[in-house]
Length: 207
Length: 191
Image 1 (cartoon, rainbow over the protein chains, first blue to last red):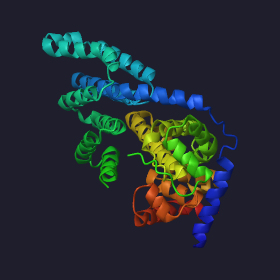
Image 2: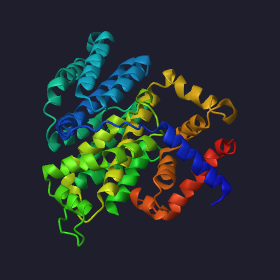
Image 3: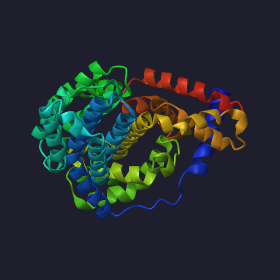
Image 4: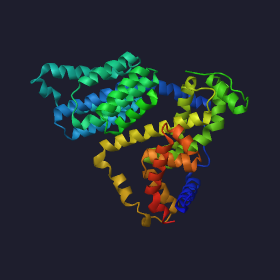
């Protein structure tokens, strides 16, 4: 071991001793089991919510020509990826408000059917998130997402959501679906952190 | 996938592993009581001793590690090591948190002055407290480099063990350690 290396180890250990929490409160099993139940519920709805929010972000992008709102929508879509359904529902509500404020009604003159479709989607999101219990629903969302116009600004958010969906498949034990989702992501977003993670997962699963 | 074959040695850790794989509630309780503090410490190290205010909360992450472990107890092979398996889950949960954090920062780029401020204030000369310098330097390492440093130097695992935990090769771990040492060098040379 070089002297630099032993200096580093000493410094790391001193830091660790100074900063480590010495009085860790150990939760009860009941607390952890409630956490398990909450996680199960959250996971069921997360993929759906996150995809819906990204859909909203892309719709905003379409109508605002990549304006500031798009970035805000993307951030909110990101928030929806957090494991908190209340936070995610709030993000959806906020996105809905943003879309309404942008005056989608004005667009209706140009394309009634598009606007009706958008409104249907927005109205459906909140109730549909409660139905996100089956893998079929996740599959439907993924298929739907594939058809959404992808502005560049949302690409990272989409990659993150795709990764979440692949992880959801894996968690449900749908290895084959997980593998193909990871592979797609590793190919389409090879340069992004999410693509790298997907490639790692492909390697780990096929190992 | 579950293997519940009884290992040869009937030690307490082995019995706990077998009972845990079988989903016995008492084993869940013991698992938390026996391993919570150790995993909490590992988590703290893996997130670079960051605080809740930085988007990481070791208490919250550790609780999630155990929630995942209990949820996935059927996937645990009773002839495997529970601490190793828990550490793997901890690594995955920490990675997942780091990913979400990066994503948030990406979209709030216009408000992301905080990381920039940090990077300008982390020159070796600007810190009086060595441990503070080291903490910041370690926190700024790429996740894979920090994982290697923490598991090898702080958790005192061999390169082979670290490679197994991180699902890569010993050569890759050696490379990551060398790279991390290189990045930490300016801070160490100040000691």
